[in-house]
Image 1: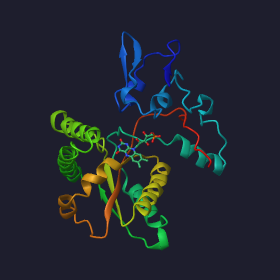
Image 2: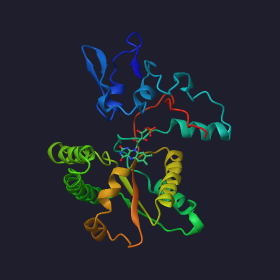
Image 3: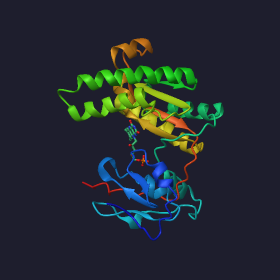
Length: 264
Ligand SMILES: Cc1cc2nc3c(=O)[nH]c(=O)nc-3n(C[C@H](O)[C@H](O)[C@H](O)COP(=O)(O)O)c2cc1C
């Protein structure tokens, strides 16, 4: 349950800007919350400079939220801070991503563990804006087609895909990669190896002071026969996930609450 403390809130609009799902808006100098598209990611709470937003109940405990700047710099504390303070970045600034950082990220992929050490992962790293634009156009085209195909069997997913397609074509909204300067497509023979590869790169992305968002939504349209052919995807591989990567301006002041993982 998300609540906004009206006494503490200075209606600065930072949370409204941060919310990628349009759940918050300012009306008459009051922040209004609409829970219909909210996934309780907690970004609003983490960017609030006045600590005015809370998520509590339903398995969440607001007491667990931490501010990390005062934590002593032991390795465990730093790793814990990086894990808890990582946020999915969906708004990137214009600063180009340094080649030296990209090299480190790609190197991290190389050292990711793979089952039987088979090392059957591959990456497509897109930094050229024209190439990124073309990829987005191609993927959105596929998203439109997949949306139409799913209408009978899965109307809810179909509506989601078709809305992404409509937003892109009518409003030029990039609802896939959020205008990120770097797109990484992760290919593998195995979903698990590919996901671990992505997570390993994610660690390095964080360590190099960049931000990223996993984009699973890109995988299905990337794996259609047309896209596989156009982008020369090897026969024994498929796109497991994409990552949108870049510099960002948002400042996160604290961690966000998460439900306990059940210990079975
Ligand atoms: C496997 C996976 C796939 C995801 N796919 C998408 C996606 O396609 N688009 C997107 O905007 N976010 C995507 N996300 C980001 C989640 O929505 C995000 O992790 C969640 O909102 C929690 O926010 P946080 O990462 O900032 O803690 C994905 C995350 C994971 C782990």
